[in-house]
Length: 262
Length: 125
Image 1 (cartoon, one colour):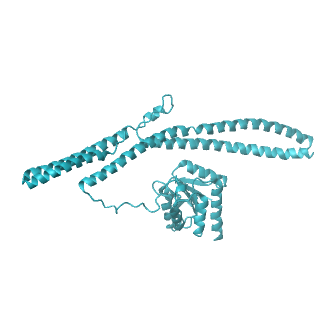
Image 2 (tube, rainbow over the protein chains, first blue to last red):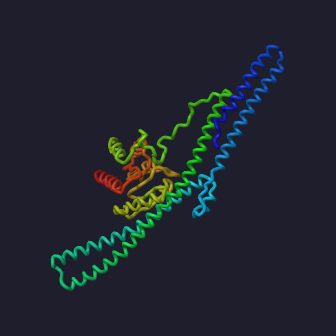
Image 3 (cartoon, rainbow over the protein chains, first blue to last red):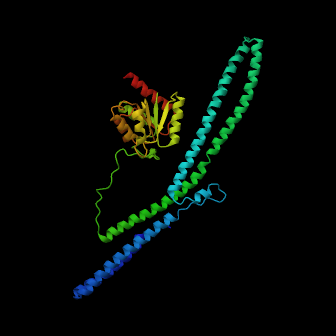
């Protein structure tokens, strides 16, 4: 639905009219029909304006279409589809991605926080049992103590069984929490498509602006382009290997800092 | 050891907080950008600051400069943990007086190493 070279057709049409009118204009001037010549100039001017308005109108409609066409159709039966249909713009969609990833990260960290002490406790109990066991092997244990150890081993085995179940269930929850990747992936693909459409339209807009400059004879001063604020944050570098101005990892940070005397 | 963790993403604060806890630092507090961090730092007697760079409100870089310009906070050890990876940014942070710089994503081992290095250096002075 992107426009195909929007300015081209119109301008060539305008150029055609301009060319045709020029010879006519010369004729009129040479034959002294000055009021006709003035009318002709007026017509050329009107034509120029009309072309500009047409272009602006056409592009505005295309941009409007690009934005209103931006809907996500998640298939029926998807639990999130009702929520998704309420989101009408890209900002909402991206916020949805942030929320989903944040929830998944928190769920995962909750389960890790829950599991770490379980593993730690099992490890402590096993290490205490191993000490007792070593004493038994060295025959340093009295019969009373042995009975205690007997019970301790039984308790430990039962607890190990239970806790392994807890860990396994937590791991499963962690696995399920990664389901966000599918949903956010779908949303991001839609946003990428919109961005591409807008980009195409913007390129067309820039082309048209160039045509407008050409028709109107405006000379642009390019020297006042905004320069990026020094050290402005850029966020994660997604193409570090293609760039020379960024480090590709902690080792390079360390090298750079040590070269500065750190 | 009282530590302030400044990051606009709560998950990243939680990751840093958990890693610090594993390293034995349990007295940690949180702020979500430079503007909310400053009043805490002014009154909280913090011993250490871990900050992100890219945050709305006030960036970690501005927080760093603000701290260094504040007589009370000029010697506060500051560790930057950030996705910002441009050489000029790292150089700028070093010149502004940062004590350590970690690029995300990072590991527990890197965090441990940098924190130890910072305190080693402070003890030497």
